[in-house]
Image (tube, rainbow, N blue to C red):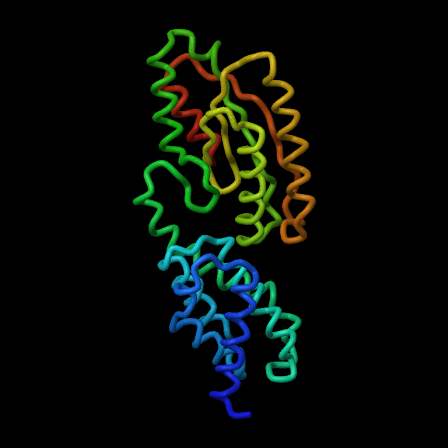
Amino acid sequence: MGVAQAERLLKSRWRTATMAAGWAFPADWPLAEVDEVCAAMLDDADPGDALVRLGRARAEAGAGLSETLLDLAALHAVLTEMSHMVSPDVDALPSRMVRMTALGWADVVTKQAGECSAEDPLTGLATAAYLRTRLGEVYRETPVAPLDYALVLLRLDVHRATGWSRVVAMTLVSDALRTVFDGGETVATLGPCVAAVLVRRDGLLARRVSNLRVLAADRLADDPNVRPVGPAKVWVEQLPDTHAEARALLTSLGR
């Protein structure tokens, strides 16, 4: 089988697998970068640069990270089936494929983040800037804001984790945060490994904090990609007396 024919076969099978996995918009799948990845996978060349370009192209086309990785998983499944046509070390590809594609995707999304005023594109949580705005509203709304409100903080221990593991871990705990605090609370990211929820103090707060602790641990335990990440620390932070002090507190917590 010629090289061009092999590339067409890989592309066709990849597209079929991706569509079967649930790719939402078939017309958006074909890209020049798809052809580049196919060529790289069937050559002795390092596919890393092609995967980075594919990740960038998917982000620029509006594909989310989960959809991009679904497509990548379909590619790997096809490569495994066609392993007699590709490099013998195909079994070592998954982690590198994920890392390089995600880096390309994140590069574009990070550049776009400045245009996203209220939501962090990687986690789907509100930005720290939006949380500061909400705190300003709270302090203007009531003279006893520190008594009526509090911050629930979640921090991940990521000192042993790689960049990709950190992204996965924050995505998982972000889902846990939204699950527990689903009553209109402001749930925001403060930094690469810190998230906060602005909540009203009530009789259910302690139980919700406990639920978050358990659910975050479950989410992290379910995914082997985040094993280097330590357990999530969850606690309640009292609001200071003034809005200025609250803004300074957010800055220190996000470091």
